[in-house]
Image (tube, rainbow, N blue to C red):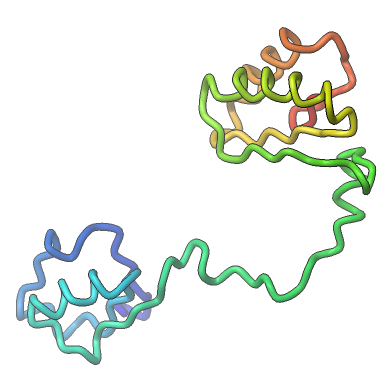
Length: 146
């Protein structure tokens, strides 16, 4: 911890230079795995100042309870028994591919729904245009192309 804030280092510890004079000021290094822990230890960081937290982006997600899906399905206008294909964190060009795939899959699975969640929300207008090019239906929203 530095100034009361816990640090998570996104760079490999081999790049991190820990001068002996600052070592005492850093109270805790939180690292993703044993490899990064070993790198800090090789730089003579005391073992009690290095802890493995795992992937803080994903490992802390609570999956013990299944959330109530019904309100989300109602909001998205998706029947509870529909199949849903979710494409998250998409980049330019991927939506066109997914829309083509979706159209093909719909032939055998008419209840299939597609949710596109782009990596960058400012791309929604571009994705809307792709939906218009790929479907004759106007029954879609930026996250729901049918």
